[in-house]
Amino acid sequence: MSKTNLTNPIIWADVPDPDVIRVGTVYYMISTSMHTMPGCPIMKSKNLVDWEIIGYVFDILEDNDAHNLKDGKGIYGKGLWAASLRYHNETFYVSFSSNDMNRFYIYQTKEIENGQWARSTFEGVYHDPALLFDEKRVFVIYGNGDIQITELTEDATAIKPGGIHQLLLVTDKEDIGLRCEGCHAYKIDGQYYLLFIEWPIVGYKRRRQICYRASQLLGKYERKVIFDDDMDYHNHGIAQGAIFDTSEHEWYAMLFQDHDAVGRIPYILPVTWKDGWPMVGIDGKAPKELEINLPASSKKPLVISDEFDYTENKLALNWQWNHNPDNELWSFTKRLGYLRLETGHLTNSILYARNTLTQRTEGPDCTGITMMDISNMKPGDYAGLVALQNSFGAVGIKAEVDGDKYVSMCVNRGDGNEEVVEKIPFSRNQIYLKIEFNYEDSVDLAEFFYSEDGENWSKIGRPLNMKYTLDHFMGYRIGLFNYATAQIGGYVDIAYFHYQRGR
Image 1 (tube, rainbow, N blue to C red):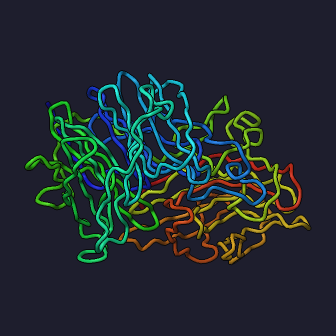
Image 2: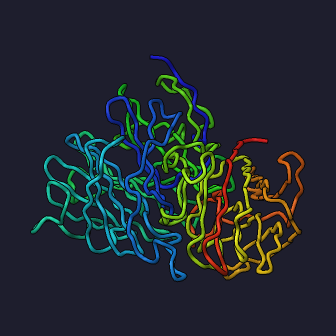
Image 3: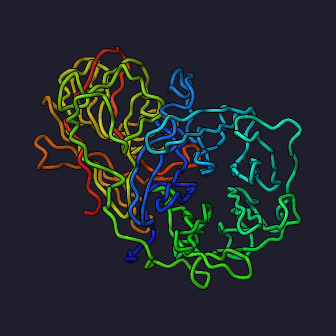
């Protein structure tokens, strides 16, 4: 078999809480998507290096005011957390909880790439759940610190009447700040393995990977630290994720590391079985480079440029909306070759603007550029390009109530509303906008530009000190937005989005 060279991080973008399985010679991965829709991205690879998005588990999770960004409500940092992906009896299963709904979900399908997903819901939050199929029995293992186990029906659509529903184990408390969570459960060679993260408050004081194992599902469990390394990056531990084998029986782990503003980024690390424990890394360290016995394949970008030259209203898979979209207010077909974003709701903040269309950003640095036809904006409208997190920064056109237009750079005032840092009169009907992101060594700066011709650029406002905050719990995304503050019915036509990673 040919070999492929792997460089860590395998993806330098926000792909948090990964779960990975192998089906035949193909690997599938899902990750946390929280408030972005469609939700629960599915990625595919044949060599663990080249991953492409092939679909999503759901278009929308729920249809309510918070998921729709209505009446000042939202689900930032909520929605889908830490999903579990499994394949059993020719069926794919995805399970997760949603804190804002106080609900646990299981989706299943026979066709992960093109199939429809059947959905089952359960009341209550099963924190960081792990599905475990044990012959004809099905369990979900979940919790933080005190780890619970609940038995499901054989078809995984309901809680099994009279089944197991109890405390499974109590993880270590002494000198631990964040106790075990992020469970991934496996039965391997007759042994049960439960993988967790924890965050000690002594020693290196960073996230690390823990394994509990037992010969019987209900215990007694032994414990071992199986990985504790930061790859010399600001003491940010690499942990939480899946272990899996290749068809040649070589074992690997997919774990993530906090990389500040860009988000939580995944690593592929070798796993060596020692005395029945899955030890991660090489001599306990995360390798920067690795040669793996898997074939080379074509690289497909995670973040893409887009000319918006579609004849139907269907987005490329790389795009996600900020919360549920209003599908009546965006179109590729009303003006061919353009993305039209219409206003249909009043708000005073990008954070509550519907139909903000986003992609991830990538390290070490990247740039996004767009061109907008702004001739059909109404007084009070604001349209542009945003570096989206709670501490957002945006550049765009503000149409004042008197009809004058200004190029405006704004940031979060602190309460979600915009503080205008700088505005400059603008009289043309088209504008070019650009944001440059720099994540090198967590410098985490974004700079904002505008142009009349797409060639000669002017800086505007000030550099944004990007901050990863837990209220959004997501790395910075770049987004196209248009919203109304005074009256609805205006629109902008966006000619393209051009993206470049690296300077």
